[in-house]
Length: 214
View (tube, rainbow, N blue to C red):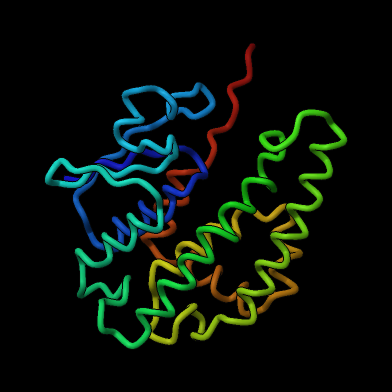
């Protein structure tokens, strides 16, 4: 059995969607990043980088970093087609775009969603957010121009790239406007949201409604 260490609306969405698509046997263990649990010694053993997600493998080994985890999982389920295998003609494209999404995309999403982590005073935080939104828009323009499938990112069909890109689009400040300007991206996101494995993961990662005190 796999154990997924996760946080709400984090990169663990992609990992859970991949596990679901594999029909893997897994359990989930919540990591409260707002309380600093990702920096506690117990978690740092699982991911020394102090980031979520981390995945405990059936043999007891531990992996961190979303792109590494999903590449490994896809190779553990070769018939799923989620990850092109070594020797597949689109293996290079897959690895390239996965790297772009996990660096240019995921890192920029942090400045969009949590600009306070990159600055201290209010004006600086606003500037970080504004520049983050611009850089995120440029990233999605790049994605729009290189979606090669119909509607998936690669012509081969559904891969973890589609889970990853759909997740990144969940975090756009004005998602509806951004998708209306990028039809290929909009079609990809709509299709992926209807994919049962991704829909299950997205629902599990939705932030809970705050409890109002009487």
